[in-house]
Amino acid sequence: MSAAAAPWRLAAPALALFLGLVVAPLVMTVMLSFYDWGQYKGIVPTFTLKNWIEIFTDSYFLEVFLRTFRIALIVTVATILIGVPEAYILNRMSPAWRSAFLLVVIGPLLVSVVARTLGWALLFGSTGLVNQGLVKIGLIAEPLPFMFTETGVVVALTQVLVPFMVLAVWAALQKLDPQVENAAMSLGASRPAVWRRVILPQIVPGILSGAVIVFSLAASAFASPAIIGGRRLKVAATLAYDEFLNTLNWPLGAAVAVLLLLSLVAVVVGSNRLIERRYAPVFQ
Image (cartoon, rainbow, N blue to C red):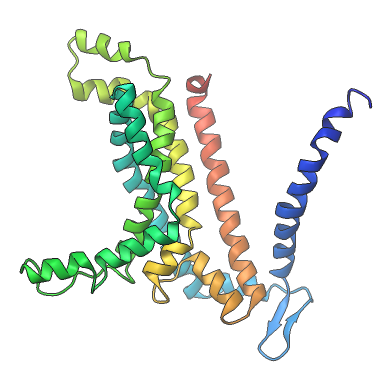
């Protein structure tokens, strides 16, 4: 075995697994999105742009994709507002308390997303514990809408995805020298000024990295929107699912899935290029 060929031969099993389990299904899905379909003739393996034309000309699909990215953007902002202060507090804790609360932060990741989402439905549904309790004590006249609303989906996804933001920001805070904060305060800077002018600029790459992860996961989420949103509130993932398993229009469902994937790839690649250009010295 030559020295030049050794790395390729060692990587061959993993590469074959990647090609078989990731690349091949993606290629087949892209090909399927260009097939024809009819209610009585089923899938016809002939090249057509009908599915893509329908997606780009029907306002229903535009509404679904706008809702998908609107929810993902709101969830991303919410996780930043919650996760950044949480990560900062976690970083300032003593090692013993930090270990305990780090387990609290990542603990929800060990529970199925379906179980967590069903928990929200049981708590805040029209017959849920919170709504019924508020009605009985007279604070509200009727249950607050939670199920089948964008608010409910945002709340459920935020709870699911906050740990990813916390971990991303916490990793950036690990590179921050605590003595820099003390030096700024010794020079007369207030605590808000230290946070705004010293800490925040150095953790922006971590915030942006966490935002990319959260946005991608929120936009492609299926379980939470399917349970909380139901059939009344479609997002791209649940729309593709319905086209595959309810209407059996696999080519149209494949086109929706491919368009969602391409949109997320564009967002991730564009964000990474922006982060690398503007904050390259921070990563070095």
